Structures are given as C-alpha cells and as structure tokens.
Image 1 (cartoon, one colour):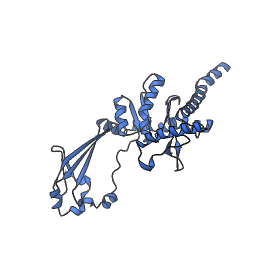
Image 2: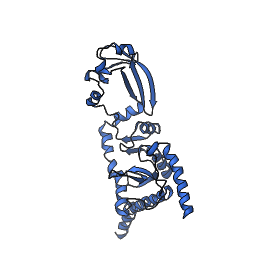
Image 3: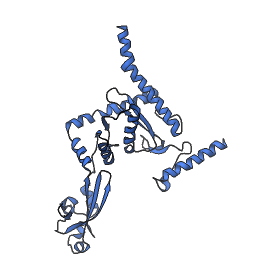
Image 4: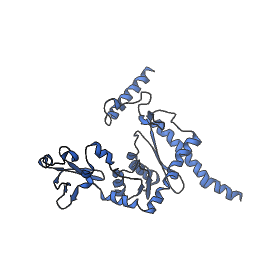
Length: 290
C-alpha cells in the first residue's frame, strides 16, 4: 500500500507540472486519486476531476467512427485529432465535418480548409461591444470605433475631429490579423473632446479575418449550410444519450487515462454492435423468416 501511494504521489506531481504549463498559481491542481483527470465544470455548475469523451459519428448510419479521451475541458482542440482518428480508423478522409460552436474557431476553420474538408459549424465571430461598455470607459457615442474612418491607401484611420491614427503594430493569429492604430500624443492633448474620446491617447484596433474564415462565414449564411447544420444534434447527441441510458455510463468506473480510454472504447463498441444488429442482423433475420 505504501508503495502504491508513493507511485500515485509521484504520478500526481508529474501531472501537476503539466497543468502548471497552462495554469498558474492556485488554479493548477490535480486529483490525488486520479492524477490523469483534470478539473472540469460539471452540468450542475460545480467542478470535479473529469475526462472529456470525444465521439465522432457518421451521418449515414449513426455509427461511431472515432472516439478519444481528452484531458482538456475545451472542445476546440479536439477537432483536428478527431479527423486524424477517423482517417486512421476508416482509411479515408471524411468528406464533411459538422461541429457546434465549441469546435468552430478561426484556427479550426483555417485548418479544415487546408485539409480540403467541407466544414459546417456555428461561428459568430467577435461580439460587438455594447454601448454601455464604451460609456463605462468614458467613451462618448460620437467617438466609438465605427466613427473612425479607415483609409486603405495610407493604412490609417481618421478620427471624428479629423486627426490621423497611424499604424503602430500588427499581431497575426490563427485565422485573424489584428492591427493597432494610434493618434499622436500631441494631437490628443490639444483636442477639446479628449475626455469624451479617451482621456489620454486614442487607439483603434482593426481585425481582418483570414480569407478561409471569410469564405466560411459566407457559406454559413446560405440556407443549404444552415439545413446541414441542423442535422448535427441528432447525429452527434444520439450516441452519447444511448451510452448514458442503455449502458448507464454517466461517469467512468475506473481511474487513469489508459483505463478510462478502454472503458470508453468498450462502450462505443457496444453501441456499434447494437447499430449493426439494427442495420444488418435484423433485416437479414426478417428476410430469412420471409
């Protein structure tokens, strides 16, 4: 028992090092009983050591074509691994992937475009700031960002008072480029509307989506793409519901990433066997009896 406890403690310390790479201070925690698990938010609003079960199902027969266990609470990082897993299991690349907003990030949109996959998902982009949020910053409605005019020829903005905001820096992120434009300090100091605009020195950020993201946004505005997206819920949610209801797997009965992965695999295999009975065995039995 002492040896097992020591091994579990050593394992927990190793996992804690991994967690600290993404979380700092008191937020970096691991479970002593299951160091491989990660603290995740629960349906009731609480937090507990958990695993993230990822299931990919085909739209034709509701068969699970890929499953994997993730230690990450967020879903967005699991989309590309799911594509690789599907290719590994089936020997071919999926023609189309449908995913909800948890997976639909600019990074994934670009990655799916590079793979040549038809990606259907929910994507809202950046939510515009509410007028009250500008007011809390001391910015009058007349000096909100949309009141500044951008000139692409000189790559600069002009404020409502006619002063120029010059390009200062550019940050390139996955699927988006953010450029910052700032006015001269002397122009803002001499401006009589300074307190209504910024109080010090005004800056404006211009975000430009990657071309693949723009193509995706326009595609998702079409009725055809919207109709396809509506099929996501029954395809994606049914295997989860079946495993919970029929098998009773609402939480894992084992500990450790490897063992949890095996339990999830057996659950998915059981589901697929049930689907095989529905799709193949029962029709054949009916034909034999007929």
